[in-house]
Amino acid sequence: MNSEAKVAFGHESGRGKTAFRVLGAISFSHFLNDTMQSLILAIYPLLKGKFELNFAQVGLITLSYQLTASLLQPLVGLYTDHHPKPYSLAFGMGCTLTGLIALGMAPSYGWVLFAAALVGTGSSVFHPESSRVARMASGGRHGLAQSFFQVGGNLGTAMGPLAAAWFVIPHGQGSVAWFSLAAFLAILVLLQVGGWYSRHQKRVFAPSAAHGSSSRGLHPELPARKVVLSIVILLVLVFSKYFYLASISSYFIFYLMHKFHLSVQSAQVHLFLFLFAVASGTFFGGPIGDRIGRKRVIWISILGAAPFALALPYANLTWTGILAFITGFILASAFSAIIVYAQELIPGKVGTISGFFFGFAFGMGGIGAAVLGKLADRHGIIFVYHLCSYLPLLGMLTAFLPDLRHGALRRDFFPGPRLKAR
Image 1 (cartoon, rainbow, N blue to C red):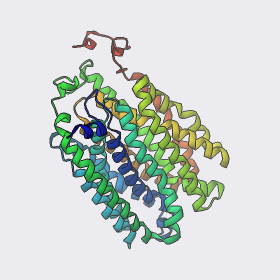
Image 2 (image 1 turned 90 degrees about the vertical axis):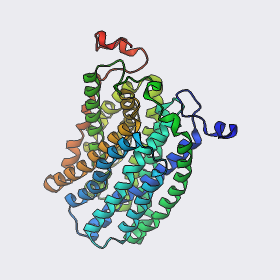
Image 3 (image 1 turned 135 degrees about the vertical axis):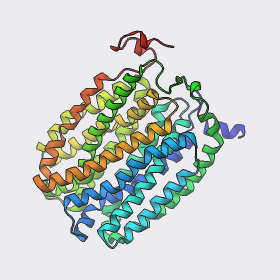
Image 4 (image 1 turned 45 degrees about the vertical axis):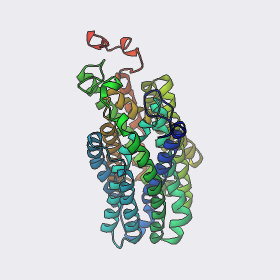
């Protein structure tokens, strides 16, 4: 690679330059990927009416694509940690392209579930490998890179309802297939990213000791049981975040239509505003974590959203929009910090950790949608929002996470000679 290219792309090493062109490419691909994914959520009213579905069946659509992503992502991450596949990103996007075409042509509910599962399969490849590329291109600013990558996806998720309102709803289910052109564009971009990945992978897959990890692959200043406890706490926090987000992304349109008698298009605009808030919060969470520590960001994000989430079910239309925006913004800032925090707990396993946490998040979102749909059928959509408003209170568990900032473990409330630096 010539010197000009090195300046343009930067280095993935711990203290190199941040490769913003690579981060921009992977974030743009994430934008296209999640725009296409969110179309499934946004056209639920259309599918519900056409195939005469109940809320539980609507939730199963979410479950079908998020379950495939949930089960496959950790396996993809584990495999590519040992056998890197730079061009697998383009292959994953090809699965998404096929799924969109199948969704646009689906003649029955069973075909809708199959198409959704194909889209989930594409995500199972895209997310862990893209997260790896983001870390490669970070130049040591891991929180910034993770947020840069994720904000593209969240902006894409926010665009889905608008795309559905402006294009899919007026033109019908078949118009979804036209969005396969976005998948084709993403494939072209990811082929370029794959070339960069291929040229840089030797430095990324150097022995983990170069990154300061211990031979056992865990954080060198923490006992194994503390690492395991921390991972469990992070998973509980992801559960609280994604169960709550499932209540919004899958059912907010129905909630607004039921409680405030909005039209489908008006409700989709409100959903867009919430998802835009999620994208904005994601952007700030990573770089702030680089500066003040990831534990503080996680603490503020999950628990800080609780007062607004608790107030939302009692608000009028105007305040519902405001509270949903604030809740989405605060809650979303946690995930970048959680991913990077977990990567620091288990160094050298970027793909495995990214795949595991993205997969768990997708799984919780899918299970949440199915469970909440069943509750909505039985107790009503209003009950679901009262119940989910308590989920952010699980953020109090953040108090039990060790502070991984340099030197902080020596001051942490987890005492003992086992925390001495090796």
